[in-house]
Length: 538
Image 1 (cartoon, rainbow, N blue to C red):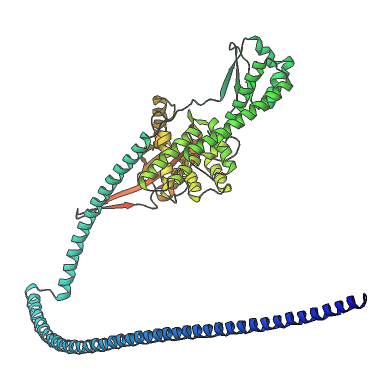
Image 2: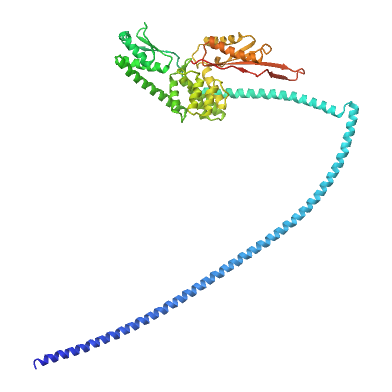
């Protein structure tokens, strides 16, 4: 019993547990079924709600699209209505224009008929007038004893002579007025340009002197057996003169740059109190660097002052070298700057290219930077330099034309020539005594007057040009050409002169007509006969 009771209790508990488990599972299934039914019911309600909302939205969209479509149709109908109205108005306008054209055409036809009628009447009147004129001409011919052609010819000759007389007088008046006007304007422009200029000048010399502490230095400069002075002259290419002048040594050279190098080197040797061939070479090299730097600085300052850019390095060097060149006491660099300012000022007054005028004026004497070391005039050397350095054609022409060796191709070339003459010829520009100047001008005129057939000679432009007027009855054109060459040759052989002198021979005749109505100016032959320019390299 003890064993059976626990077993039965266990079986009974198992049976009861199984029953309870089945009851719980059955309850769960019922709850799950109820939950599923509720979910289905809820889903069905949601589906119905969504379906209803979709139907409402679709209906609203349909109504909206229908309303917009109706609105567009209405607008299209309105546009079509407006277009039809414009078409109707255009048709009415075209109809009115067509009606107007028909009326105008009728009016023009009416006017044309009137014109044809007037033309017919005019032709009839002209025929009557022509008959009257012919009758009058016939009567005039009978009264005057001249036919129609003779009368016409006489009338033409009279009118032509009268017109010539009036035209000649008018030409004289116009030329006189133009010349006076041009002369006045030229004087005003040049005076204005000169007023804006102020330039200093230095004396020209081929010698330079250096002061010595005492006369004992002369022996040191000469050295034993003259080795120091020989070494100095070899290094500088300058002649050293040691004479009786107290406490002074003189150096001579036609090259101003070499003179300046020699002066600086000599002063450096005296300052260091050491003179020997090695020290001489060192000081000469040092002085050469100083002069080269001075040349570079002078060039840069000049170009900056005149605001000239894009200059070839070779021309820059030549421009700086002009600082050490003088001509009759006038420093060439200062002269070139003055010409540049004058040409620029005159170009500004005339409305020309101011920068190009200054450039041409500055470089017009660039050939003088090397003319001591080269053959040919400074003009030909300057043309070669500016051409080689690809300068502006007007600049090249200004260099060639400023001594009238070529015709100017631009008004700027003429301005440079005028500025060069103003700078070189005006009083005070070059240090030459009035007496010497007057003697040189008088000698030039006397030399030209000494030739046979010369009527009068005039020296112009401070002696840079002479114009020789010959007697036309004594010399022919060929002889006038030969006379120009002979005068140029004699001046070159017997006189000293600055730069170039142009010789112009003029063979000119004034003839008066028999009627005393006007003068006829007749230049015999080829007019002015110009000889080749003669050049002094100094």
